Image (cartoon, rainbow, N blue to C red):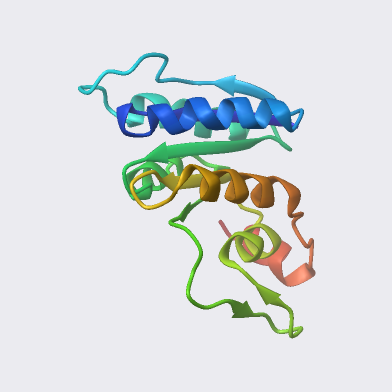
Length: 155
């Protein structure tokens, strides 16, 4: 599976860790930057290319990282075809869907919204939580349920 990854200085070290981890999981990883730590860089310079690449390559995924992940998700979601969501770590509650299935936020967002970009808030999660989130994100399929397909067509 092709995974594009990008961050500014805030998530630089976590990005490097996740690149290695994704390689261990046998994913093809393309690093969209930052390629060196620079405390003065700007996240849109790295996040926008990730979102464009994911939107142009169906079946690919993106992992973007920032301090909170919010600005990064907002930047990514400005690209048509990009569907980014923010993950801060395990939620205190889980969702029960209309079929009675209990889903965490990652599984819910993948299964119901066909999210293709995971935005991580580096100041809110540990490296281990980030690894677990990335793994679950990439392993959870879109449900393909008619109601979800219908809703996505309205984007």
